[in-house]
Image 1: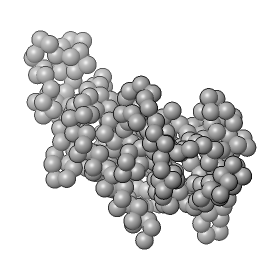
Image 2 (image 1 turned 180 degrees about the vertical axis):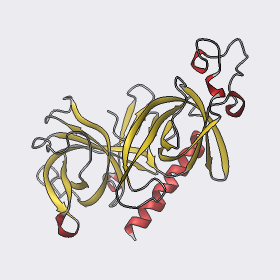
Image 3 (image 1 turned 135 degrees about the vertical axis):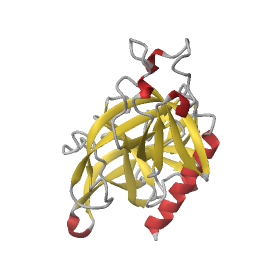
Image 4 (image 1 turned 90 degrees about the horizontal axis):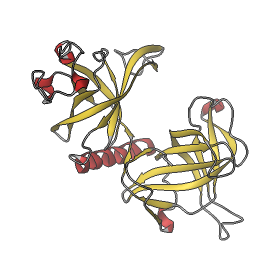
Amino acid sequence: MSSGIDSKADAGMREPLPAKLALPPLNSRVWMDVGTTVRPDSAMRAVDVPSRVEDLTAAGRNPAKEPARLLLAAPTYAGDAELPPDRAYCTVTWMSDRGPCQLPGAFVGVQRLGEGGSLRGWWLEVVGPSIRVQRRMFFRVPMSLPVTLAVDPLVADVPDAEDEDLDPDWSDPDGEAKSERIVAVQGRTLDVSEGGLRCTVNQELPEGVHRLVVRLALRDQVLSLPARVVRTQIVERQGRSDRPGSSGTHRAIEVALRFENPEEFGDLVRRTLFEHQLRERRRVGG
């Protein structure tokens, strides 16, 4: 299970939610795992894909005959042109003020959304109790913030290039420090979690650099977060890179990073992400 979160521990305990917290709020951001069959232990067609609650209906007096239902914005993932089979097992995960929550669901149909029906929504039928997940997890929240990836040892506060104990990731085979080529790379975050972030940057990282330091400002505090590069890829993104919200597409360099010590600023990052989610929910809900 990994919906919308990065697990950092063993399975752990799960606590049933009280009835008033049993469904994600309207307009809230959620993450989905999409199954291939009705069985919970079957392979997943998609994992960790974002969506939003468009509508919901609470369970009736007899939940077995009148189960709760959620209408979610259709998730986007590779192969999403083909709908899941009827009653395919899915999970929906969201963040509450009590931590990550999750419910199991079954895909039961599609509904057109928006003016002219240009968008699609998925109806899920709730097939089990909602739970609060009681283990160390990192929830990713979409956020656009300036970020600096420092790859120079002096700027990044990592071992100096002349240090005999320099990590091999930081040096060429001939001993030349890779970080001497580019001091820092600028960019903007796409999403942030306690465990890492995803961002677009203005130039490629030096070849072979796998460790760096993330400089990020949260709550008027500039954080320096040692991180490892998980993935770098060229992607097509909507709008012009110099004009957010414009039409068309542009090619962007996307970098995914994992913090090496997420506990150091975990509380600060968690509070910032939760407050951001609340502001977005109020903005969307009017």
